[in-house]
Length: 139
Image 1 (cartoon, rainbow, N blue to C red):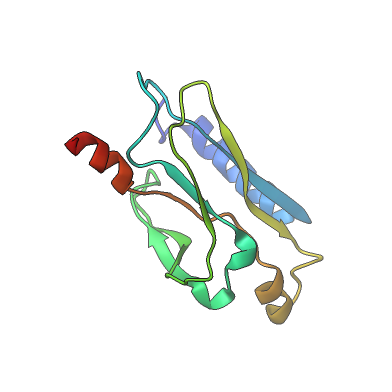
Image 2: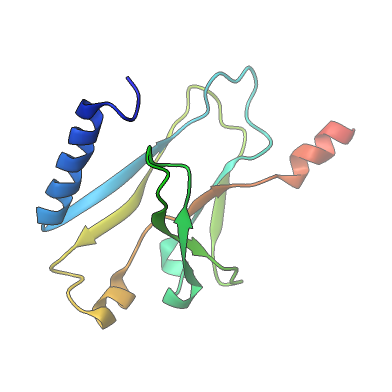
């Protein structure tokens, strides 16, 4: 099935409607490498400790190419801050998985603009080119 099938669009609409009506929801991410003969050395996953991020670190952005319509999806990115604490997971193998809470929202906790600024928590994550992997290739 493709992303344009009625079943998938209906399902996506159902999920979106359930989220709108919910008092709270959590999004979990399950991250693992696939089809790797060796541990992943270049471009490992890194996650940022959400308690090390300030509201001013977050930058509104848009993601393109993730919807079947091509419409942009609102997102957030981070600008650099030396106070951010990042943790990487190098050398992951096919039989390992990292589970992290990507996002959590509770309308009872996030009911005002000021409170939202204090309690907004998500797990920013990225892959990065690890210079140690490139050094190993050169040797």
